Image (cartoon, rainbow, N blue to C red; front, top):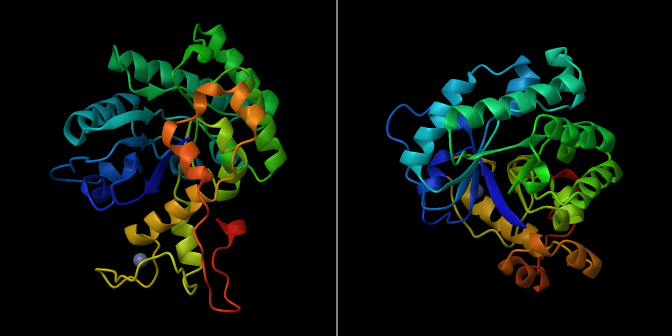
Length: 300
Ligand SMILES: [Zn+2]
């Protein structure tokens, strides 16, 4: 699994001291007035759809403007691996805000993928999104693509939204297991730590910004693996802090359980070279002040 660290700070793209693959959301880049940062690391673009759909019930940027912006990011920022579509997630708050059905959101997601791809032309960076609220809904979405002439099993990558934020981990497993069984190469959007620990062998790649919430909620904890540092603007927590984020990333990746061997046999293509060595490594030793939780996995 390739992991992209989620960040709200687009300036990390140009920072050699951050130096890991990043996931940055469109709304963060859209606010930049002057010159865009030049990326020294590979990165992926999130459309910011979760906030758009759950808060506004629609996208406030048109598909044409989004394509124009992505083209500029690919040219001027560089190192862009791929971009998310303006897809329609299917969590209850998103459906409530838009007033549409799961089926409606699935159709809109395909429409948007086809529009973005058509606007871009050859070598489109847009990854087809899958949405749904259950295993059957996700499988229906794959069929809906097929009916429009798009065979996702032949796609280099599909993005899977909604599911990773589901409360029910058995249902997440059913969804990802069924999609992996079709041979899909999946990127998991906004995956929580618990989801990564359980399902990383099914994912080709994933991103997460769970470190930020973790830092905010556990601000008083002592993290022995976080080097001593200060915040330039005097921030009280590490919720937007690269030192903390990098330590979290290292700890999280090192703590992923080794995949069962039958998964390796079924899905030989999903393993990156580097990670198998990384996951065999011992998790970092963490000492703690008695009575203070070091790292609350349930919350991140
Ligand atoms: Zn910090």
